[in-house]
Image (cartoon, rainbow, N blue to C red; front, side, top):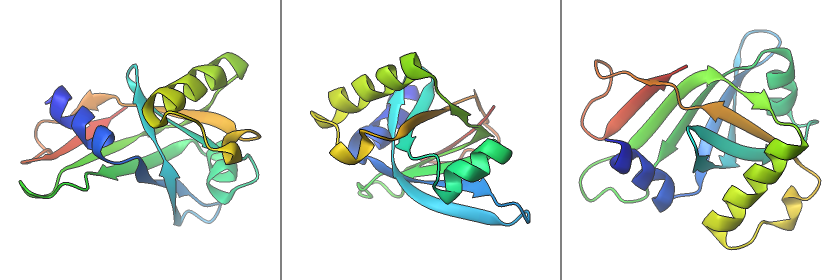
Length: 135
C-alpha cells in the first residue's frame, strides 16, 4: 500500500488542502505538494487564507489524486494538524521540492514551509485505490 500511495504523489504534484475558516466553514486551496519522511510538505506565504486559517486552527484535510485513472481513481486522503516549519524545516522542504521537480519555482522563494504528518492508515475507510490516513 505504501508504494501505491507514493505513486499517487509521483504521478501528480498538485493536491487540495482544506482548512477551517474563522466562522467554521471550509476553505479549499490547490497547492503543490511533495511527500517526504512521513509528511506531506508545501510552501505558502503566511498571508494566504489557508495559512492564516492554519495559524488559528491547524486542523486540515488534504486530498491528492493521481492523473492516471487507468485502474480507476487513485487518491490519498489525510486528516490532521498542519504545522509551520522553522528555517531548518524550510530547507528540508526546499530540498524535497528540488528533488521532485528538478528546480523550485521562484514563487516559493519568499514563502514559508508547512507540513502535515501522514498519520495512521485507516484500513476500514480505505477502499480500492483510495487510502485514508489520520493523525
